[in-house]
Amino acid sequence: MDFRALPKIELHAHLSGSISRECLHEIWLQKKERGETSLEDPLVEMPAGKFDYDLDTFFPLFSRYIYALCNDLTSLIYTTNSVLEDFQADGVVYLELRTTPRAIPSANITKDDYVQTVLDCISNFNASSSMKTNLILSIDRRNDVPTALQVVDLAIKFRDHGVVGVDLCGDPAVGDVSIFQPAFAKAKQKNLKITIHFAEAPQSSTAKELWTLLSYNPGRIGHVIHVPDDVKEEIIRRKLGLELCLSCNVHAKMITGTYSDHHFGWWRETGCPIALSTDDVGVFGSTLSNEYALIAEHFNLDRKEICDLARGAIDTIFESEDEKQRLREIVWK
Ligand code: IMP
Ligand code: ZN
Image (cartoon, rainbow, N blue to C red):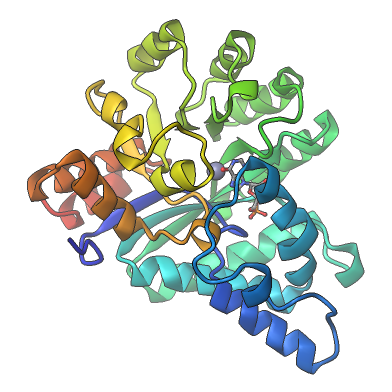
């Protein structure tokens, strides 16, 4: 089944992980022509059809390669616009894009400039398209406390310009999440929404870590894989929104087995709103419409059940009742 025409809500997409290989290749060609890069061609670095990035190879792909290639204002604008176009072309009608504020000293770009630039692209796109996009700023698990607080301060500064919340992401093998308490407390106090990468890998799924993360009062949580029973009960009691990323979890071997073994099958019975999401479509190669197709195929959902699933994500967006109403009128019954 082809779900490109189905109006969809995407709530878990990392900007730099959503850049297509073709777009990265175009950036590379432009830089190559100007003699500005000695990096390998993205189509060689990330060959077509290669999606088997695991937690050991995935994070270095950004720090070693994608950030080194997308390292100036031109590439930031070009890639952001390309990502927005790709989501719209796939039938996304509401997008919450997330990104980690990144200073690029070699190009004189501060974190403030970075966020401002992404927001300018989004607001231009919002003005000329039927897809609405908001931005979430990510704290990386590698961050220290001042850096995390800086992310929250940027989110507060730009909250009237399209920033709706704060995320916690990054390598699940790294960091002590309890240090971020002041950052999430400040975000909450300023009425920013919170989403958190949650129980993504066994190392980041101790009872201590998960209860600490729940104490930050997230409105949504992402991945939600290795969850003990008492934590599951609490998630259901709070009816937290769940951002579930099928292809990413299968390709990165974050779950045992394949699509039909995905924990979507377990969570769908619980009454928590579910937002099927792509995570990093540029790396794992599966568009949101393809994620819906995979769910329909492997969990035997008919057309009505797929439409209900797509509509269910509306309840958990970080936006006003008016926007939810607009979406309820667009997403098929
Ligand atoms: P950016 O924040 O726009 O630069 O997007 C890329 C970044 O998102 C990566 O460097 C990671 O820190 C983060 N990221 C992307 N996918 C995942 C994931 O599945 N788990 C945790 N962090 C992720
Ligand atoms: Zn993610």
